[in-house]
Length: 185
Image (cartoon, rainbow, N blue to C red; front, side, top):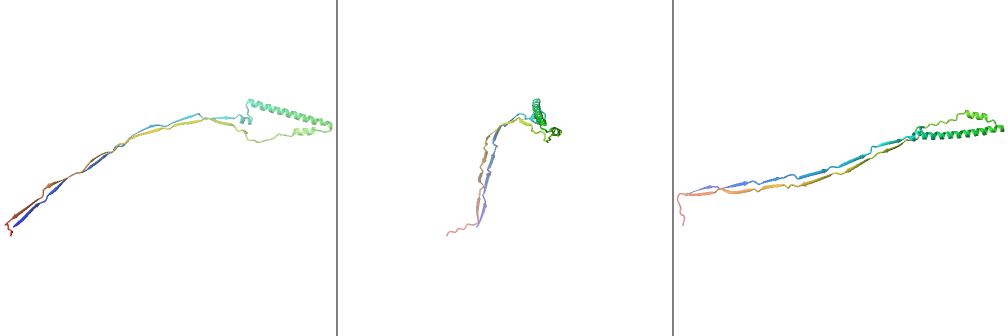
């Protein structure tokens, strides 16, 4: 007896759909508004005031009123000095009676140069200098306003799909050929 076995293997099929995952992201919506800062500068033009009246007067340059006062005082001094000299010389001449001879001494004194020299820097008095004017700065702060809205991401996801099926069925064929032996006993 002969036994033949034919076998066909089964086959499994798999269908697969891959998973997908997509994210859409939009940037946030932002609005910025700004109020600009302001600066105001207010200024009076600067001016320099120089008063040279005293400076010029110390160098001999005077206005009419000061000139008159100066020379009136100088005239008074000269008159008083002349009176004093005349009185002193008169007193000395009055001593001639007592036997003194003041004339040669008086003559010698009148020929002597009694000038005094002084060196000085000019001017003796500094000019009066003053300044006027100002600068005023006024500033106002600006403002910045930010408004934002968050945009959440949009997520699209699909699951994976896996399907298993039987593509070919397995088969087993057994054939027996020849004589049968009865083994029973």
